[in-house]
Amino acid sequence: MYRYLVLGLLQGLTEFLPVSSSGHLVLAQRLLGLDPPGVVLEAVLHLGTLAAVVIYFWRDLVGLLRRGASPAGVGERRYIALLILGTVPIVVAGYLAGGAVEQAFSSPALVGGMLLVTAALLGGASLLAGRARRDRVGLGDALAVGLAQVAALLPGISRSGATISVGMACGLSPREAARFSFLLSIPAVAGAGVLGLVTESPLPPSEAWGLLLGGLSAMASGLIAIHTLLKLLLAGKLRIFAFYCLIAGSVTLGVGLLS
Image (cartoon, rainbow, N blue to C red; front, top):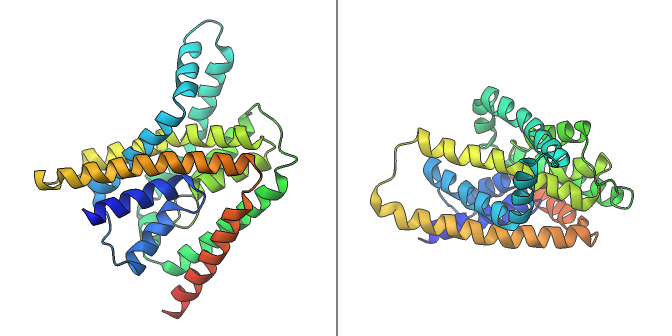
């Protein structure tokens, strides 16, 4: 049970805080001796974090779907179309580069280097916060943020950090960059979770309680992480995560190169 709880908490916190969930999973395996979660558990953890996003942004989702279905919901239908457009790059990349991405998880040095990239992205976004004020997402914004989500397939590149930073670099306000980033995560996380469940043999019933614990802990910690990130982002304190990734990346890179 300890393993399920730790992996669930780790997934939920690092999926949404801009510090890279995949990178920390690699580090947890090396430093804490945790076994890899396995396909089914990883799928359940993804679905737990998906539940966190849906719960936190429930009003946004209902508003988009309800108004998008009405004749007056032109803006909502446009926003949904941009979310679909932003999802296309991750679907294509996931299909074409699955094997290469899996190999990247075996290199702590690569994780360290990519954490430094995340630190640079967050540092740049922190400097741009005062000039990023636009609240209307455009075609170029959706594509740029979608491509940033593709980069986050590499362990060490934070999905939330990359997508929010790129959104702000395009001129989106911190609030809108975060909103679009989190809503954009729903198809990607849902796809990863469902795909893992349908392509792998089910675990024995004895593992059911562990899976439930992992999923619930991922959901709970995910809700906390989303709230914390939005609060710090709107307060202009994104640099906190940049410093963290700089330190974590430097240490990880050094250990990886020396081992």
